[in-house]
Length: 281
Image (cartoon, rainbow, N blue to C red):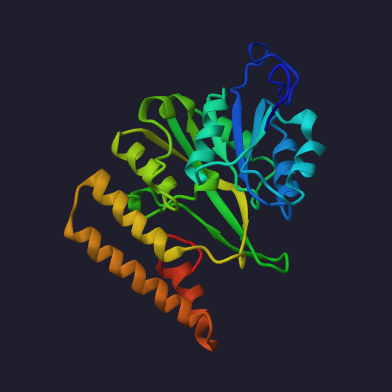
């Protein structure tokens, strides 16, 4: 069943044409994510920048997710709960509903920094992709490392922090949305297509989002293979793509093994002083 607030209610309670600020649409997709969802929602609703349209796409949760959403019903522009065809399909549902000039996507266990939207909006240009840094947190609540993007490496691997990325609605309209064939690296496939198209990427040197370390294990290996597939599809098949795939698999294997030994500090040294991309290894 779909649930919509009458009139397309917005957080600032003003018609869009009465506000000089750009409208930012934020999409959260969720499925049985009641553990952290409320913190995610509050990080959107408590932003100092208030020209925001918040959309939640639920995949038919059976836990307390819907109760949490209903708690904030009057401040959410649109929410829907129904089965979907995967992450890409859920993303696309949200994008189809979004009316803002900029669209951000926030996972149901991540949260925005308090001034994130103000910083993003200050760098807005039409037909652009705006992105920034991501702060990782340990399970005990202490800060871990920051992940800084490296656009120059995007043709090699996912070198941007997708939760920090805000894409102009016009680019989705021009270059299409997420490809349902991709189950893991759909964000990389999309950003690579935008990069090759010559779209403008704008970097904001500030923490935009926060993510926890030590959650459920992701299918990292499967993601690497989808990145390899996306590169072949967008950039053309090249031997260098296969070589880089093997390098990323080897790098991941070594770091995973080291993390279970007293030599785990080597991973931090590599990430902080050697790796051109600071990321979770």
